[in-house]
Image (tube, rainbow, N blue to C red; front, side, top):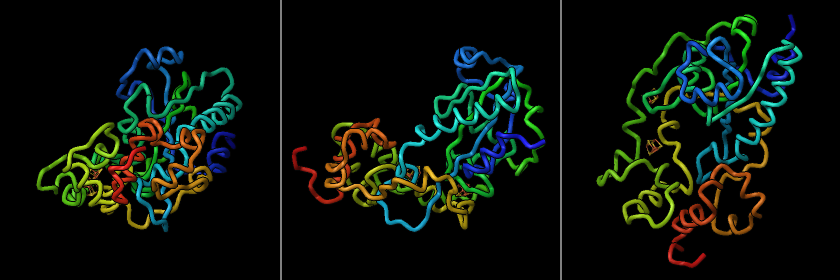
Length: 276
Ligand code: SF4
Ligand code: SF4
């Protein structure tokens, strides 16, 4: 049978997805699940949304270069729910990403899509770890989604330790903590935190524990058009000043407000003492 939902996913550039019974997942927010009208007899279609894109000079995490993936997932979730309702009439289909009612990494591992990395991230043996995870929740049993073959039966990475050795937070003499978390901190930073940002040249986030991971060698660029478009790989005070409020609101870093990102960008050009 030719399912419309599979055609839609192929056309969107999404190649890796699989269903899991809700009863086999780790439920975090049962109220959210029941507010969707779904219980343990239902299932979740787990989707991997790769965003890897090579060849750019950047000073922010790769995930933050295109517009915020929540914008894309809202669009995709609606389109996919429509297609699924055509393929399987009479069932409920709801979408959630990030604030999901289940542990999505655990569900993606159980779906046979990949493994847990020592760096805490989900890793696909084909697409690597530069990916978002999303889910379509339904009261339909998982076996109705059609045939699926697991991509891997491994549950954990090879534990080579490269991510731990390369981590600037761990390597720092003062052990100031995760660089990504520090770039997201509001307010005034300590001298050690400022130094870590400057030394690593990161205005937002940190990809070091991903960039050294062997599973991210030779991975393909994303086929998802949304992640290939509207890219802003470098943030400077001038670029941030030039962004309208609407443009800024579409970026993944907007939740920490413009002044937090501006503070980091100023550190990079030695203007940390300037007023906003
Ligand atoms: S760098 Fe090595 S230890 Fe770290 S997540 Fe990748 S495979 Fe696992
Ligand atoms: S994001 Fe960067 S600082 Fe944080 S754990 Fe990974 S390598 Fe370390």
